[in-house]
Amino acid sequence: MLILARRIGESIMIGDQVEISVVDIKGDQVKLGIKAPTSVKVYRREVYVAIQEENRAAAAATPENLPRIEGLLSPAAPGDDQSPTENRRDR
Image (cartoon, rainbow, N blue to C red; front, side, top):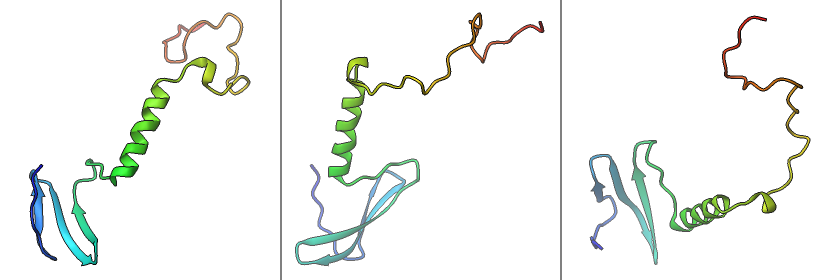
C-alpha cells in the first residue's frame, strides 16, 4: 500500500485520467474530490462491497429460489417456432 501525505488543495494522480484532491479536513473526516472519466466507476467501499454481494447472490440464483414470473410473458402462438429475430420468408 502506498501512503501519501497531502494538504488541502493538493492532489494525487492515478494513471493519466484520475485525480484525487483533498478538499477539506475537519477533525477526523477528510473530504476528497475525484475527477475521473464517466467510464470509471467510483464507489465508497461499503457500497462497492454491497454491489459485489448482490452480484454473487444473483449469479448463484436457481429457478427454485427466483420469484415466479408466470403470466408476465405471452405464450408463443401455436406452430410459431421461430424467434422474432430470424428472417422469415413471405408466406
